[in-house]
Length: 536
Ligand code: SF4
Image (cartoon, rainbow, N blue to C red; front, side, top):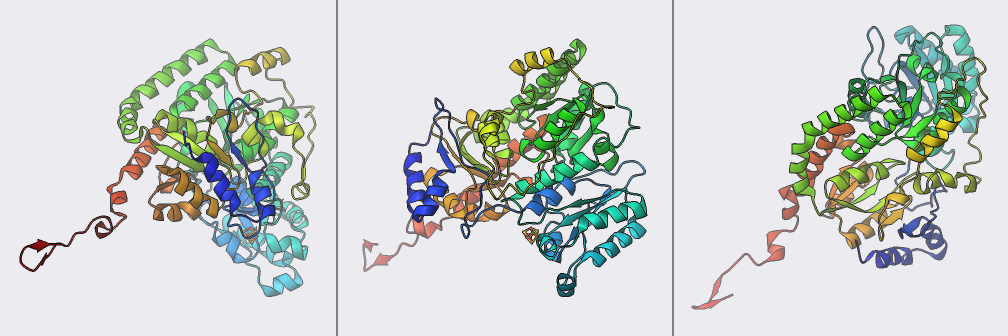
C-alpha cells in the first residue's frame, strides 16, 4: 500500500488557489474501508485545468448512437465534430446477412458561416435527402453540435417531417456539446430517445428461450463478439447489444428479452431502469472483464433464470474456458506479479479492470472516472441523496409508464427480493467499495494531478486514454490505453483476459524502459590517461 499517499494528495492540493483547492479536494477520497465515504462527481469542470473530459455530443453520438451499424448518423454542425469522431472509437460491427453497415463513414452537414447566419435546417433537409437517395438506410440519426442549439435550428421538426416523407425512423438528438458537464449528459439524451422512439417498436420479433440484452457493451476491439461467443455456448440468445455491433431492428425488439445485463452502468442505466418499469424486464450488473468477474457474472445470470440445466451448462463452460487459458495466464502473471497500476477511465472501466489486474498479481493504487456520477463511485443506494445542480438540470428526465400490452413480470416479487440478496439485481455497488485501504479515488483527474501522482506513487502501469498516454510514457511509465486498447483486443471474457495480460506484460517489461536515461548520465563512460600513470 502506498505510504506516501496523504503527502501526495496534500502536495497536489497545495498548488491550487483556495477556491480550486476546495473544489478539487471534494473530488478526492483516500480510502478507509471501515468508513462510508463520499465523493463529489458530475460537477462542472474547472476552466483551464486541462481535463480529459469530452462533451455531450461525444457521449450521445460517439458512444451510444454511433455504434448502431445500419443507421446513417448525420452530425449537424461544422465539420470538426464529425471529423474527430470518425473511426476513433473502435466499436466494431458485423454486417447482418442482406443488411447494411455504415460504420466506415462519417456524415456531416458541414455548416458554414452563412448557415450559422441564416440557419442550417435547409442544409439538414438536403443531407437527409441525399443520405436516403444514396444509401437507403434502415434509419437515420441527427446529432446536434454546439452551434445548432445557439442558432435555434429545429432538428426535431426536421426529423418528424423526414420520418413522414421517407417512411423510415429519423431520430433527432439535442446533444449540443455544452449540455451537462461531460459525455454523461449525452448518454442520458441518447437513452431517452432510444427508449421513447425505438425500444418496443419491433413487435414481430420472436424471442427464444433465455433471451437477454447486453446493455452498455460497445464492442470495442471485438469485446461483444467474445462475450456473445460464451453466451451462445451456454445457450443464451442475445437479442441485442446496446449498442456495440447492433442493428436498429434488434434494439427495437429489446423488450422481448427476459433479462438485461448491464456492463457499463454509467452510460445505459437509464434504459435498464426504464425498460424494467415499462416492460417488467429486470436487469443485473455484470462485469465481463477478468476471469473471476466473468465467471461470477455468468453464475449470477444462471441463478436469475434458476434452471438446473442452465446452471450445470454454465459451470461446464466456465471450466472449459478456464482450462483453455490457465497456462497463458500463469505465464503472464509471472511478468506482472507485484506491480502497481493507476487507472483513469471514462465511467466504468476504472472499476471493471481492477479484478483482472488483481488476478495478474497487480494492485490498483489510484482509480478515477472522467464522468462517473456518485452512484458509480458509491453505489446506487446513494441516488436519493444526489442533488442535481444547475448544469445537469437541463437534461430531460423522461417518465415511462407500464406498457399495458407488453408489460410482463419475468419473476415474482418474492423471487426478486430473494435474488437481490444473492446477485446484483437492479443494483450496483460502485467502485469505492472494492478499493483497498490507503488507495486513492479521484474524480475528473487532470494533467497536473496525473503528473504529480505518477511522480509520487511511481506506478508500473497507468491505464488511461490517448490524451495522457504519451505524457506519462515520457515520464518513463508504461501507459496502456483502456479506451482504445491501444488498437488491440478483445479484452473482455476469458480469451480477452489473456489478450490483456499479454499486452500489459509486454508493455511493462519491454526493454525500452531501461534506455530512457542516457548511459553517460548514469555513469562516466569515457576513460583517459593524464600524464603517464594517472587515470581519470
Ligand atoms: S464541444 Fe461542441 S464543438 Fe466540441 S466536439 Fe462537442 S459538439 Fe463539437
